[in-house]
Length: 506
Image (cartoon, rainbow, N blue to C red):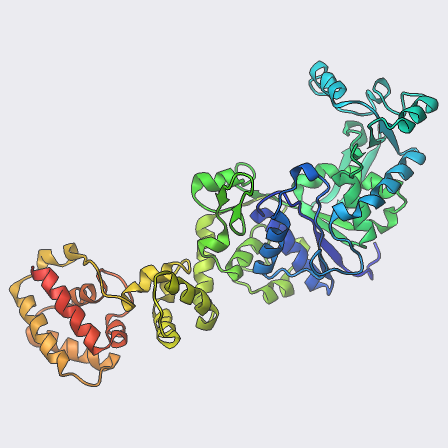
């Protein structure tokens, strides 16, 4: 391939449902490679199989890419010089190439009905349409030219199949796997053009990649068995010298490493495998996504990038710009990458800590609004600084900070009452009087005042710190208790101590 050729890569999903994280990773690796080399990232919708088309799936795919920050340079939404970007809108061009292959002797018309093919499968359990039996079946190779022409002129339903030559070695250089070789004798005569005039994946992907000047084809390893058919098509259509470089990414595996990660695995183990919520328009079934679970796009992308790739160091946290700067295909592993949901949560936790509060604030304010709280952003910003290290998901904010917005409805009395005594009751009644007259209401001064009172009481520090925390927040959690008291203010703090003390001694 010409080293000076502009890098143009494509993500080409089918609009058939939710977008699996493996698909997003394919898009991500394509995007990173394109941006690393100053190239273009193209979104092409492969909707040739109209029987599997699901309304809303295309918009969902584009929304997922948008959320992840993988913005295509060309797509059905943005257009470009190589459109249309939906295969269904390119239908007219595919037949001419299929017919050209027939005329050149590289493909043939097949008139077998679905019933005839089903009968063959019943008779031959491992039936495949190939050089072994093509002359015994109903096609333009076994029929005379006159018979073939009569069937075509009569409007007989047919497909066009590639004529795979037996006894050839077909090979190519995979950028991840090195030299990959196939025996053509083991290959089917795949359908290239269906009876409805729509191309199959095999024909469409080669024609589209050629016409869109795609320089590199990066896809999952499940497409590796299709590679020899595509190589033959690039050759038979006279485009072999323009064929893209290829790389086949390793699978994302189940947590135990046994097989490809599926939606069923996520359902069974309690984690999402789709980027965003997907609701099946036919059944209404809702499949949860990473976004709605509370993952930040930065964390989701970072996590995906390290499923099968690393930069050669021990570093794990990367922004998108850093991934672009460091990405290279030769750092992608050949082996499958096991998905670890605990690790995914770790990435989210780290990114919550790393991002500035302002970047998190819109989600926090939405979360508060969902609980009926209309709070001042400056107040919320201070709280977020105190609790963000305790957040795994953005939705955890309410659990970790609800007490800043409303008084506790219950107390963890079991943590206090077994060691409670009259001496402690007296201490808290006295501290209420002390704090009522205390100024200024600042964190450091509050801590000094409280600890001085403990020393004067002769009791241990730990015996009186925990009760104060439980009175203010309801349980044994939260940031520094004096930060909490300072933020709540004098009136609210005194009210909570009074209410909490009453609950303990009741």
